[in-house]
Image 1: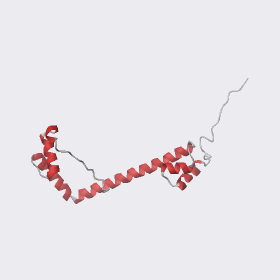
Image 2: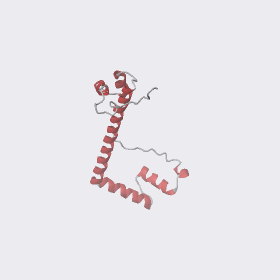
Image 3: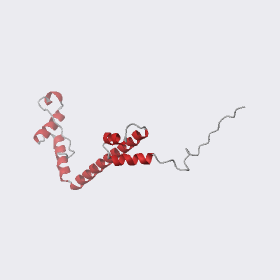
Image 4: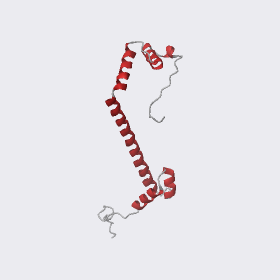
Length: 136
């Protein structure tokens, strides 16, 4: 369904042996949609309130969408960083790197061009001065 919902499966045959009274009541409520004690009554009311609260549902969905976008942005940034590292280490051709990281070849070639640019004139690496000991 690709709705990002979590689905839990419970086998309730042995619940009487494994769970305490409150946990059994909760699983019975989940299985039969009937509450049988004060705890499950409260849970059922909270669920119904959440279903009806459109503002809360919208906030939750917005939060979920933003979380997914952030995850995807971070993943994209990491893939580009991996491509740069592979290029810098000369571990494969641009074609191999593009295929391995599932990137367009043009993007890998652009990263390669950027990598081969000379250092700026005011870079500390271009103005290094080496002092060698004088021989006597």
